[in-house]
Image (cartoon, rainbow, N blue to C red; front, side, top):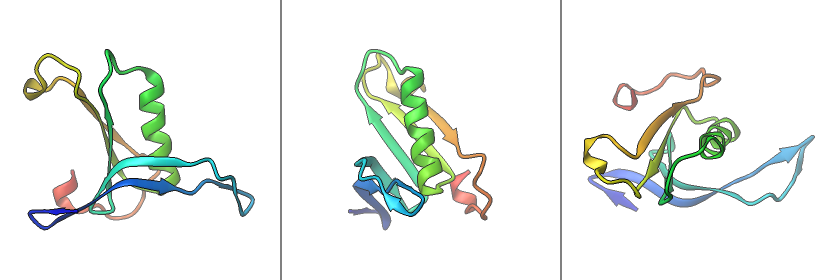
Length: 100
């Protein structure tokens, strides 16, 4: 999928391995943008700690620097409700300026 030449993939599988063996857990990122930003999409009454931990795990497992947790079940998404930015503090590679 490409929009305005921005590359994005949906339902991106995440391999989880232990001591070199794939555990076959079946995690999937909702959307991966430009192979650098993870979007985790929800439509729930309230974001809970488990949702933040899920996104952080995805960032750590895939070595991506930034993710957005987005909840569409809010009264006014355009006023900044319904999303949070999560950073992978273990990411130590250069990040493009447009990301930050």
